[in-house]
Length: 93
Image (cartoon, rainbow, N blue to C red; front, side, top):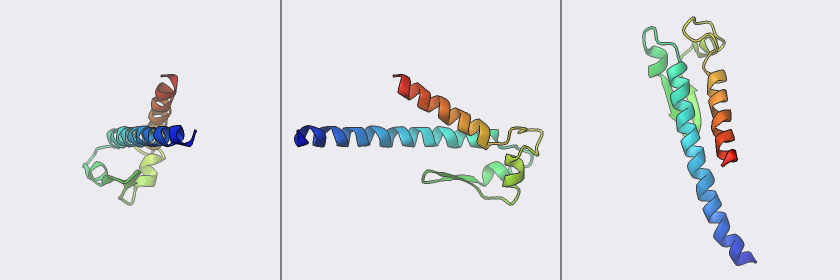
């Protein structure tokens, strides 16, 4: 029985890792598209570092709170909805 487990675990680990990478990239793109673009500073300073989206500008919290007419829902809420949809799609398969 341990041999079967050893064969399955690496495959599952690879699948999970690939899905995590795919969802992270999709989330980053969604966050960046949702970021208001007045001067381009906010979008230009939004980076993906590992599995973390970094909004490296001082007014990121205000934009995410919906203080911009361009992004009344902020960026995090729509990104979270995208992540939820993607995970639900994967689980339905």
